[in-house]
Length: 463
Image 1 (tube, rainbow, N blue to C red):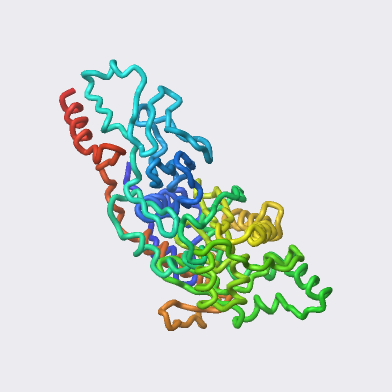
Image 2: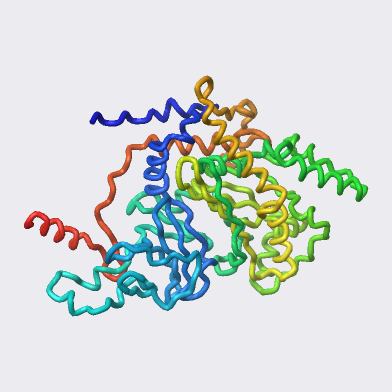
């Protein structure tokens, strides 16, 4: 069988357009998983999802199932979600609290730090080459946290998390209002939906400032009607059409944002925002720091509706008060989960306002999310009509991009600078020479198992 021809990604990604096959081709999807999701850093979860010892969550890195668990020493660990004996998944619950991880198939049991604590009928393993200290759960090779955000890479070497995040780290700072990981509560469940569309479409859409005036016309119309009844002169259509209210910003590395702060999610509730009242000394310090940086009006508004609107490449968006996680499954199927967050130094009234604002626009029966789901699935279906024109165009605003004093690139709110920034990073990663898959496997409680692997290879030769 002849070898498959390598994909010419440089031909398929142009400065102002991309080829539709990048959303549909199974071979390209497989290479995305390998080069982007397995070789690079991806967001896995937040430490606030596992606040107590024994708390665990089933997660994925690309298509690889992993389990995130907090051990008795307080560390948050990531293990491959697979028993070392016969491969059964250990954790199938989305969330649980357990004293240990026990395989339901043959009863192999692992401590919360991943080390193997026991197997049924251990006498039968005598003289077989079985060593308990080498059979701990497989650790994800690289795991780091930033303000409680847990990132991981299946590659044992590569750039650091700090290098990966770059300027996006500041947007995480803003998202959590400069709070520590322990002060961010991710315990309000999640708005989840599956999407018959490629994973890159919801990434692009998350920072698309062009579609709101048309796709979310009913929402904008309701806000304007409420403004009219109240005797206000708000022109929400003008806010989207003009560039003076907001901008698109390319932070580099595929991280892009809609740079604005006057959000309108809470306007649907018809109630005034509650008074901001920090409930802890640390919270008061955060509050005063924020006022010093952003002013009182913006700080009070943003603590209920969010400080940033940013995509962190490749798989999360920080929008308002939510962490939105985009999970690729197949070339035309994606799972999305939006986790609203609270801050433990804010009053119950303020945290409730954060959740109600999130529900109003991003919940399953809201004004925003259903519109986005419908249109992205229409895009995926439209990609089948590729015989005469297979290209998707992102050239809006190219001529008015400008460099900001901090080195980032700016354009108008409705320009497609953000999509171009995402695709530049995608092309960079997909054009790199694929790294060889590492042979060394790390397990909990044993360091590396390279020696065991060498022994296994020797036994195969002996046989």
